Length: 310
Figure (cartoon, rainbow, N blue to C red):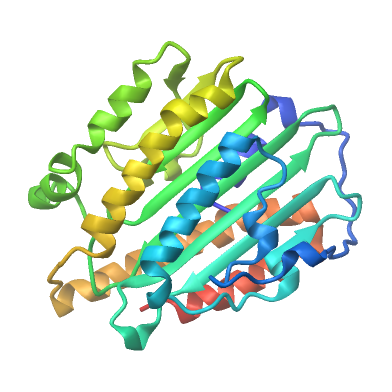
């Protein structure tokens, strides 16, 4: 569950209700559909059960592409089963998560890849559906990470966040800006989307989120009765192209990183993980799923993040 996505829950007026008090005790519900596929991805995660067909098709395509290109560089998911899939007692909040860390002995540049979906029903009606795909590279490269969030809080509205967040100061390193953001023409993708009349810029209320993204980041809100068509025709091609750019230029690009730089990259990555867990998830997960379930998920993530800090 991405930091931006869970933060959005509390900035969305249509999903806020001061009288809602989530239960403190929760149970884990898992069906036979949570079996493991040949790629090591749990069915529960790949089902994306609460989103439209074009939305699901896009996420399955993106995750499958990552698995195909990076699968041999990744460890199997080791999250406990009650962290890979969980819900609250009433079934009004459900989530699935799939995390694979990089194989250190394989000369992998991957720190970890995290995919997730979240479904949360509002007591006043409506629901929030979030699908996310995030990938962090380790300190053997300084190439950007990958961030993708599709956040839908009504049948006619979606926030789209697509970016390759930088891991270096773009002012101090203009070559970095040129290599990853100018030469790749990422800004053309943003311009394509923002020219559409149904699209307007999205401004996160989180200053941390706004400091995290790149100058070419796509942060937009789509408002239309034809949302499924917009996903299929416009969002999907841009998301797939951005993922291809990240895989070709970042994940498999050749970068030389000095030993003195690796310490900085490692510290920066650790701080990003701490921000994700302690500032955002630590407050939001227990509220959505209850203290017991929220703490269980947080502890599992902390454990994985500590072992992947390389």
